[in-house]
Image (tube, rainbow, N blue to C red; front, side):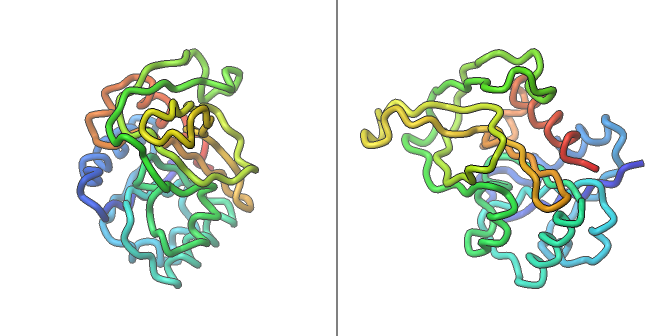
Length: 213
């Protein structure tokens, strides 16, 4: 049985504990044995090197140097990493090694909660199979992203809330490699209620399974 670790915490506005419960249930339905922790100390445990998948749900906060080194080394050696929204893409702002591994970092969400559109750009990828472009209401994440990411879905900014980014096409969902490890990220999922959107839930579920070794 594949082993997964979910580590939740940080800013409560993203409802990390509730999100961890939903992700735990999804992974258990996929046949994983899931352990849930709520301290970054879990990332410093040498035993994470034997896991199949790690899911951080930990907006902002701080990651100790030893914790960062142990986590990134585990992924480089083959452990999968996957997550969503600020729980992965706005975690540990002062840990560039963590951001390098994730392939991106949140920097803004102009207009806060708004209506926008998700455009599927890799319909041939199994993670996106059968999913069409869809409307979404949440924070539209503006991110600094790694050009080596394999982008699966994007969104286009209108410029309504920040005129200078009118027409910017921004990755929303991507996958990548970090050493031997697979990394998956989706910027969707500001609060746990968004798991009720079928496309959001399906994309994340498939992405986490893909990332796991």
